[in-house]
Amino acid sequence: GQNIDQPTEMTATEGAIVQINCTYQTSGFNGLFWYQQHAGEAPTFLSYNVLDGLEEKGRFSSFLSRSKGYSYLLLKELQMKDSASYLCAVSSGSARQLTFGSGTQLTVLP
Amino acid sequence: DVKVTQSSRYLVKRTGEKVFLECVQDMDHENMFWYRQDPGLGLRLIYFSYDVKMKEKGDIPEGYSVSREKKERFSLILESASTNQTSMYLCASSSDRYGYTFGSGTRLTVV
Image (cartoon, rainbow over all chains, first blue to last red; front, side, top):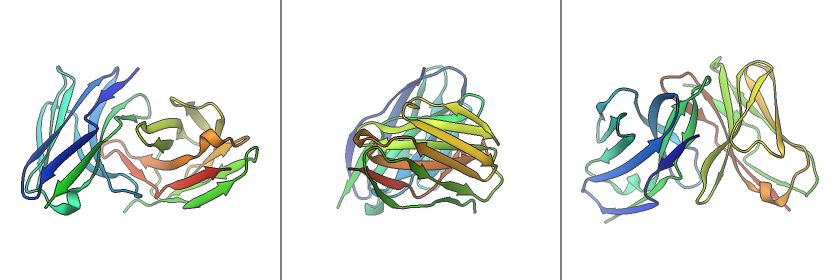
């Protein structure tokens, strides 16, 4: 089975840096994804890690350690529009189906 | 861009009704998925399909069935809707490396 843990809520200030952690236990690991979801909308793809290390994409970076079952999403220069839920998801299985964590609701304050 | 279209944005049905949720993708993806999303529980996988006429149960298949007669279309069926199936339903398709593309979701209310 799969088990994915991430914090329920986080708060940060505009312009700051925030790190959202995700730990997982899984069999048949194919990769780890981060999605962003604004209220009332569908999730949108942010990043994908399959090998250990850091993937950088503009203001967003994601890190993976497969041996530790650990990932984080780093958001820099926070903007008000970054207020959203951030979903950690692990890919496994024949169809590379995703198992999602419950999501971290990030609130960015002015 | 990949487009995944769900037929209804909002739906209200009565207890005991048979409900069909339709999903169509336009990028020839092999894999399609149905999730439900509930507060505090996140997205939970109901069923998925990796080819036409092929289907696999996800984590919470009870009370649901699916149909995939054509590659681009994946339907979720609630055989006899119940109030505990009130939820947001999300369809997705995938091409492996970049994970899923989601539809806009169907908010189903069963009364």
